[in-house]
Length: 460
Image 1: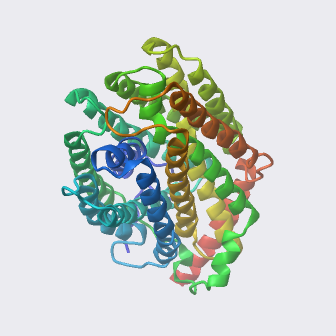
Image 2: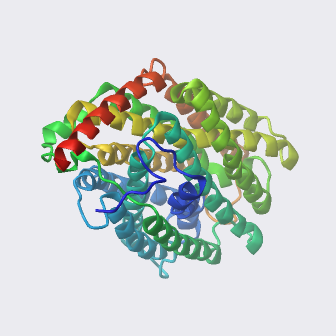
Image 3: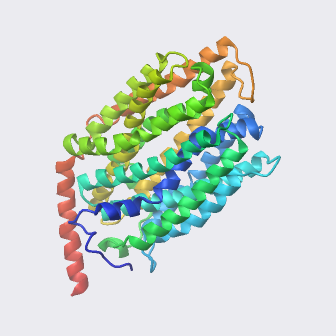
């Protein structure tokens, strides 16, 4: 088992240097999120030739298969014991899977069919799950305190924003005519492969891992896992996360089409605006982390949801082709959107502590598997629903297609109605949330007493 470090422990805060090292794998994950949400669907629809309906079907099929892996990985992860540790082992194992799958999915052979795309994307999602689950679950262990978790997950999101920002610079630097140029997509793949390998190597080599005292508890039955899943606080978290993620991903899936066809921005302007949206997370992450410390995570999350919905209303009133009018709106939207990831992760860790106190067993891997599963479900539905609606309104996704006024008006309605509606619905699930800082402090105090007693008994 990996050794302890004086910089990491139940009563200590992670140093800034160790936090950034631990966050390094998020560079590739942040880049992947943007590539999947913004660039890959139109690449498959237009260049590969699947069409809007074909892309919707492919992504929906993949997510239907892929979501079955996350709970299984989470349950096995919580029961893993290796010389590398528990979560570090899965982080290292996930890197080569993710790297090989990225190249296959982003650099498909000529005339690649749907079966090839499904298999390649499924492999990417599995690798992504292994990296995300291990890092976020490990983070809950090395940052056990209520406020420290907001800071740690803010740092991970901050680093992810940097990765996303670099990816978004690639279309600008390459001066491509479209956001789905094959050479551009290949460059994105190479960037994600390199950063994933380097980031995992840094985090795994320089972050110690302590395994909680209940590691050797008897494995849980399926009934015990189901008892965790159906807990009211877990259900509330999952449903709220689905709505908030669906609103944001819906917007991302249609972004290029909306800003170019409906708002009159060219490819370069659209990429710069998207860059501002993503990079606003560099402002939003520390700001929202501080607000969460001051007002509580769930209250800050409700504020983010309302702010995101209001920002989308502002998008509708952006004058056509007016970059400087659009820029501040996109910055506000991006600063709000980063809060969804930070706060949901931190709240998941808190609920994981409550689950461990009640059951006597570590289930944080399963908890994050559930959140990852909901993210994948929403990703599939966001693309499937939004791209299916594009077909219904007669919007053409082929390169160089001429749109009718009716199809552009339909695009505006589809682009705005889904994200606004789901963001407002999502914030309702967090009204009345009770696991605040005071209650979590009670949970952690009880866990610390029990862990100390277990350690003392083990050393006797």
